[in-house]
Image 1 (tube, rainbow, N blue to C red):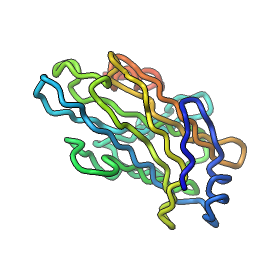
Image 2 (image 1 turned 90 degrees about the horizontal axis):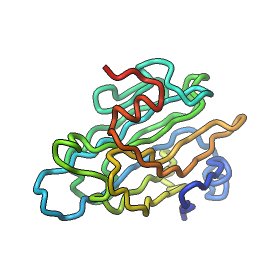
Image 3 (image 1 turned 90 degrees about the vertical axis):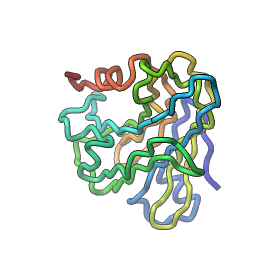
Image 4 (image 1 turned 135 degrees about the vertical axis):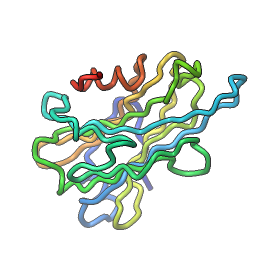
Length: 196
């Protein structure tokens, strides 16, 4: 049974894994999912998951540590593809992580979701529901942590969903749920990447 977190809660992945009977936590995946509310706009929604691999100051130090549909891999991380419609049940986009293969300077991994062409299509996260992130042990298939975003983001076009971060020798999960206006560009600026 996965631990269900509320916004702002933090938990040790190693402790959750041990409590779930997972002997050794190294390869995990983060599944992100959502549904689009039916509304009068008519345009399709294309939500995109992205990952910012940050140093101890919370900044991305090189472009290759920004993982998204056009840059799918970095040491220890693989973005498994862009679901352009959100159709179907279960995870809409998946990020695989090998905790032991991450570079030592990666202290925090931020999981974000943005709406492609949100301004042009007049879309925001208030039109999205049933959003979640879950952490699953890849070896056993055991779901360890789940965070369901329950807020109504009526003007936001980007959300920092959650973070994995190093705390000494262990990794912890932080349920963030912080909305941004300005889409992907705002997130890039927040994590220290120049948008050109």
